[in-house]
Length: 249
Image (cartoon, rainbow, N blue to C red; front, top):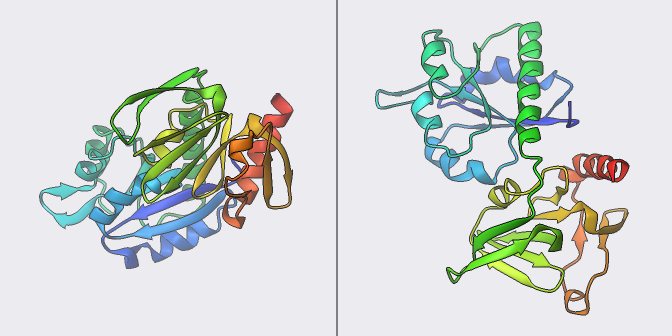
């Protein structure tokens, strides 16, 4: 397992039906935060901003025009997904939208744990595919102009009200993009989130002291930037990823 903890989102229009499953999930040692949502539209709008590794998706929303398969097909980059339903007839149709895993809402702990072990392997494989040597990015800034960014120049990126500011060694680029979307464009082993609002280039870190992060060669015009700090929510995962980076570089 590449991560210490994997985060789960459960989407179900009847969250009370998940009580048993939630109890079982809470006992799996390698599962971290578990979130339950019931509003399909809200989830569709917010899932890109959430730090989700695994999606448990209900198949029957009580709408003849919208089931789990249809909802999932609306996502451009869905997390590794488990079809979660009491009705086995969804097993075959879920394959058509790329769902490889299926579980009922009252599984035994052994069945759930074994399934999640397989699922996190898939999560790790997906992350591995993103470990590519990207040299530069082409993005549009807020004025609509195409900008080329050299990955080696990135210090960190900060999201604020859906506006992403990418701080470079000598400049900054402002664009309208989610932090998750920006992260997906970069080598996953070279960047990490110490905080929900920003992503840092691990090779630009001079030292980490307590909850503070100090960057290398911070230019004079960067000294006014806000202090970069680590929040408790991301501390363990960030420090783990940073230690692995230092060992390999």
